[in-house]
Length: 557
Image (tube, rainbow, N blue to C red; front, side, top):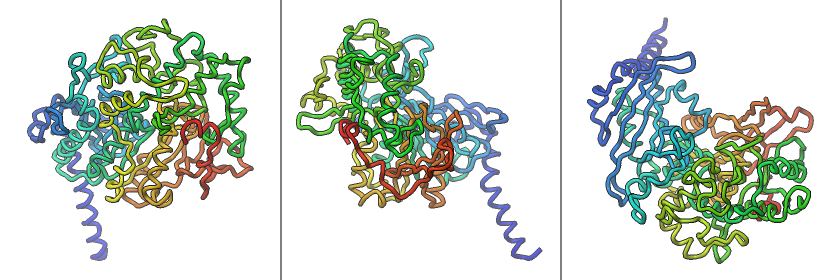
């Protein structure tokens, strides 16, 4: 064996010990006493459990704790967190976003990334953002993340620490402390830090990128809840919808979908049961009167597809996509829009009862609770009294000013605020389902276009920020299109290897696969292969997703 080979093997052995041995040795310190002895600033350890390896997951230390939050113009607060510290640590740090109004220690992020993270050796962290959400009844699986009652100490009196923590403070504070915990636990430095969130987790992602550009090397933002103004659009929609003459029963949604596909499926050049660009569609719900819809129901759909604007015509929030309104024979609690189930009392303050929780649609729960407890600070407020017109979609000046004054601290939607993140060489990977009824995909497209204008066009922007639109996918998943894909590996390859993702292969339980192309490219069919196979499609140098038809125009594009 030559001396060069011997030296190389020695160096490789040292590197192996440096990267693997600290992680393996650290598992013996998975106790409250040992972790508390690390004396991480502002952190209290509540529990530590050594979780044994399984055939699908490595051994890891499951840590529950809390972090004191300070600054941001608010009194101190406290945010719970959960950290999972794997025995096979790869020196990666991965923070997951939380859904809705938070209040839980459950990730709202790409489920493929969540499932793979421990096996890939990431130390993962999630926070409840400083409060505990409660459901409408014991065991309510949805209520905790639609509960905003924590935002008030009493009517008219906001709980400023909790609101500030939810808006921006808690994630940053927990990030800083959790990084210390991870590095001291393993006695080694983190070599890459990522954030991964969807929905409200996507809002968290943009808040991190814009307020704290040093926290993460790369960020994944799915279906981002970019700005809380979505609640104004939701209020407009419910004011239109909540009458016996205008409510759209769920049984009619498959018929509406069939008409939309008849009008739009072929617009991308191939009739394949997938609408690649619903913004290019020309669907008018009034053409379904009287065979499918009443005039009032058609008006409700038209309003749902239409943008909300201020008194000067400026865009307040985009309208919804026309594609895939039906979530599959009933109410999918996470992906449905505003149309099911029918209320018990159309004119009650809480049309579905139960303090605005189930069985109310998820979108109602968010709109109702944010308006009551965060914007108006009045638990008895009826959203019908908010000044936005269901017929014109125009919001009054005073109502908009009040709304913004009490919510904009939680927004991540100003493109200029992202420039520092970009200048630092960080990477942002965004994805959004084109059939998302909870957070319209057109809001993300509008934002991305505005960001491109600031950075010298799409080609230049794609050096740092890439958007992948997912045809047929609903909110963070679901829907008829290929909706399962890995974003963590492409981000890691981009950050560490300089390999920017040009296309991401997505799959559907039916077996269909398809490439997701970087916006504004649309996947092109080769004309001969099966339309259900990704091998029959390619990402080419086109800008076809910039094509806008009547539906895109009415949505505010």
